[in-house]
Structure formats: structure tokens, C-alpha cells
Length: 104
Image (cartoon, rainbow, N blue to C red; front, side, top):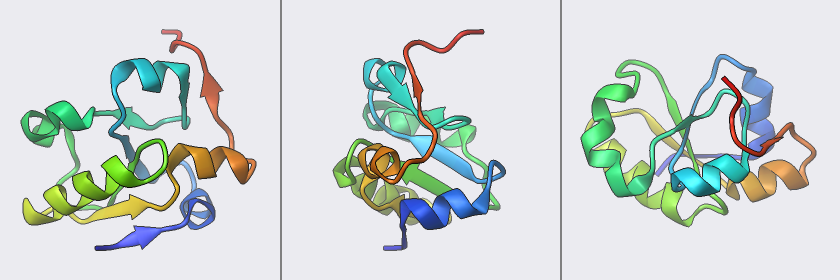
């Protein structure tokens, strides 16, 4: 399984396609800017929401759910990469996090 550190992911810039597989309430509490929320519980029915021809960086709270999602997506033919340590590690390393519900 492919993996990437949060610092390596941050270095890719805002063009990286980040998918957060935590549940919607967890995502609403804290999220990486520009990450798309596709909860693991419904990921199989959301495959059409993923870019088919570029890497997709999969994130959760600490890496467990994202590892399962990454393995599943790789089986489906996606270039899926597990974000090691998840949003917890992202925050610990000083990268930007948005807190509270998204404002439209």
C-alpha cells in the first residue's frame, strides 16, 4: 500500500486531491482545507466522486480507516495513497486545519 507523510502531502500544495473518510460529524469538527469528505461507511457508493486518473490522498483521524479505504480504492483501480497519521498528525505538524462547520 502506498503511503505519504503529512509533510510530504503538504509540500504537494493545494492541487492535491485529499479525501477525508471520517464521518460527516468528525469532518465538521476539524478538516484539512480543500479536503473532500467521503465517509468510509459510504465510500463504495461514492467512487464516481473520485478523480480516476490522478493520485487520491486518503485521510482519517489517525490512519486506520484511511488504510482500509486506500486498500479498497487500490483494488478498484484508483491511485490511492494513505496519509500516515491522518489529520491528527497533520495538525501536530503545524499544517492548517479548519475548525467548525463549513461556511458556504
